[in-house]
View (cartoon, rainbow, N blue to C red):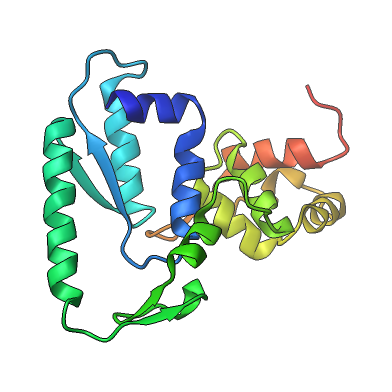
Length: 198
C-alpha cells in the first residue's frame, strides 16, 4: 500500500494505468502489496483507488502481503504461462490491436507501446490533460475525448453554447454509463471558456 500511496500522490498512478491500457495486453493485472508501514493517504482512499482500477478500468487486481508473496505469485504466473504456451505455435506481431491467444506482441513492440517517454499523439496528450482536471477521472476523460477529439473542438463548442456549464454534463461514461454531471462540467467549462475565472 505504501507504493500505491506514493504512486497516487506522485501522479504516476494514472500514467501507469494509461500506459498499461495502451500496451496491447488483453488481460492487465495491477499488483498491490498490502503490507504498509506508513501511508501518506487514508487507507479508505487507497482501497477506493484499487476498486476503481478493477471496476472502471477493468484490471485484474492481485493483492499480496509482502515482497516474498509477490515473488511467489510472479513465479507461479511464469510457470503457468510457460506451461500454457509450451506446445503451441506462437506468432510474433507488432500491432497491439491484433493480439489473440497465439498472436503475441514482440518484446520490442510491447516496450514501444508502453514506454514512459514515448511520443504521444495529440489525442493522447489531450486525454492526459483532461484526466488531470479536478472531478474528471480517466474514464470521464475518455468519454469526453470521444465527443471532443481535440482541445480546439472543445473550445469551439464552449464558445458556441449559451449555457457553457453544461458542455460535458450529459456525456455518459464508464461501466454504468452514468452522466458526467453538472459539477464536473462546470469545472471543464471554466477552463475552456473565455469568461474570467472567479
